[in-house]
Structure formats: C-alpha cells, structure tokens
Length: 234
Image (cartoon, rainbow, N blue to C red):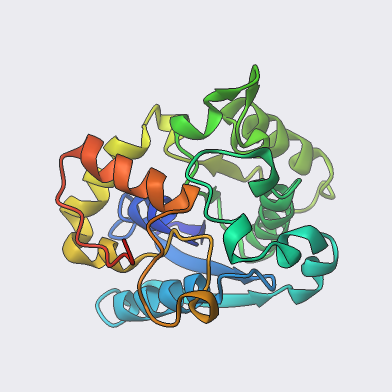
C-alpha cells in the first residue's frame, strides 16, 4: 500500500482526505503556526484522532511552527471586529503560507518515501480578484510548478518525484468536494472549523457566522444542497 502525506486544516482538506482514506497509508500533518483560531487546530486534531480509531493506516502528526506568527504579525493584531467582513479581502491571505507548508510536507515525503502530498485547494480558490487568483499559492498551475521546482531542489539520490494533488487538480469545486466528503464522513464534516475567529473571541464552540470563512462555508453547503448543521453565532 502506497503512502501519502495529507495536509488537513479545515472543511476542504478534511473532505478531500476521504478520497484517499481507504486506499493509502496516510500521515496527516496539522500545522500549528500560532494562528489566531486555535479552535481550528483543536477541531482538526479531534477529527483525525477519531478517524485513527477506525483506520489503522492513518497517522496524525502535529507540526509546531509558532515562529511563523512573527512572519505574519498583522494577522495577529486584527481584532474581532476587523475579521468579521463577509466578503473576500486580500488581507486574509498570508503570503506563501501554503508554500511553506507544502515545502515541509514534500521534504518529509521524500524522507519517508511517500509519493503524494494532498492539500484541499479547490477550483474556487483560483477564482479571480482584480484579475489575480484570490489565493495565489493554491492555484493549480502554481502547485504543479512548485512540485517540479521542489523535485529539482532535492538531491538526486532522494526518492521522487512527489506529486501535489488537490481537488482543483481533479477539476473539483468546493461544492463537489464537499459532497464527496459528506458521502464518506457524514456528519463529521460539520465539526470542521472555517471561522477566522478563535474560541477566545467567541467564548465557545460556535463559529461566528459573519466572517468571510463562515459566509463562504454557508454558501458551499447551499451549493452542495446539504443541510448545514454547523453551529454558528448567527
């Protein structure tokens, strides 16, 4: 059975994990980089732990990268009221964050002999904002180039190449990926975290329902025609 490395952090990546869970040995990497929403780390950890009880070929590893918060100080300074904007804003994008994660994941994949790294980027993530992708380092063409570049950067004796796969590479939208995940995981998907706020801001386990992450989450459930059982403040 081949091995893959899965980056899991929220709804999209958790749903995409379902496409591989019965076919591969999987090591799930959860990155704790000092993000404001620590509830997301906790929820993802809980969900992956619940899956390891049923899937013996699934392993969870949490990568501590709290030093990254010094690369993105503004993301820590925005208060609750600066994060509840319901529409996309460029300031929500942390430059090259996913590139950093993927570089670590591919370096690890080379070490353990995994042939694929998966990430939850969908075709929606490449939709334009002022003629540029909303999330530039989740764009499929960028990920394919990154895959090639990182292979070139590895020594010739390292196993490889390692492919980067995502819903977008398979032509899947958020809604299609969500439907696939729901078929496999059922109500577990409602326990994923999309809110830009953390439990310290919300005072509980409910997601705010107002920020761009929550609004987009609601839209995707509606597009997928799945009743959204997520707990929101509003």
